[in-house]
Length: 258
Image (cartoon, rainbow, N blue to C red; front, side, top):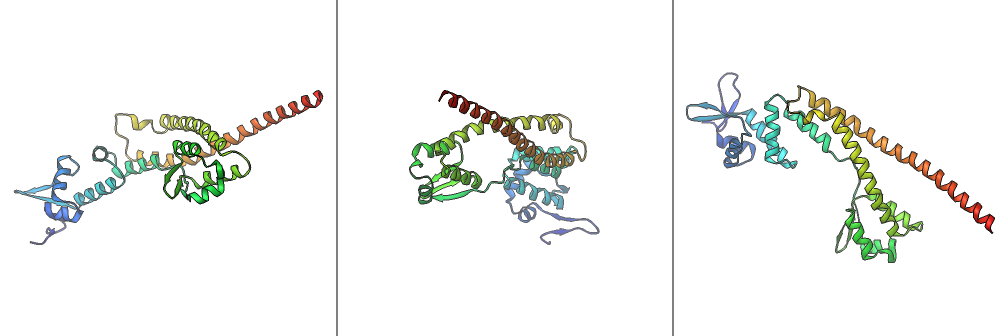
């Protein structure tokens, strides 16, 4: 018998257990485990022989792709269960990808110790290094460091060159991070309440709803960045005017006292 059974007429190709496992690149033991976890549809039975079709092979390949992307078997079972109850698995996967996709497009940068010393000199202290590690910006190796963001590293380098102590830059970074975390939380609340509330419901999503939500998330993401950037620049305008007015007032007072 041929390795892959081609049934008569217009019937699609069918596989025995061993043949399906080989085509999917897994072991028969793994295939049976997926069956036990109800990750795979029941086969067609012909007497005592179980025949699997192209839909089973497609399911196994999808499971493999999801595992490579970091999904757990429990999460895959949930997605498959949702698909079998009327929600398309591919749509749900696309929605998840849109939700959890990275917002940042930062490029890591690697510097050896000689480069760091030439930039920061005696400010390259153990305390400053520990603070950078604590904030999650650098990882340290024997031959240097890796910073998560070339832009942040370049900004730090230029601020220090302008006379701002490295410790002050790190302190400003720590305080800024607290505020931007709060801003991110606000946006998460807005999106969860007004765009993704349907995901928290017990009822299945209507057909096509996952795709519509995905499209909305993709449209909202750049808008959130625009709002945050505009709010920051407007806040800087307000603070600069206040601080400059205070500086002029102090100069006038000092002048009158002199």
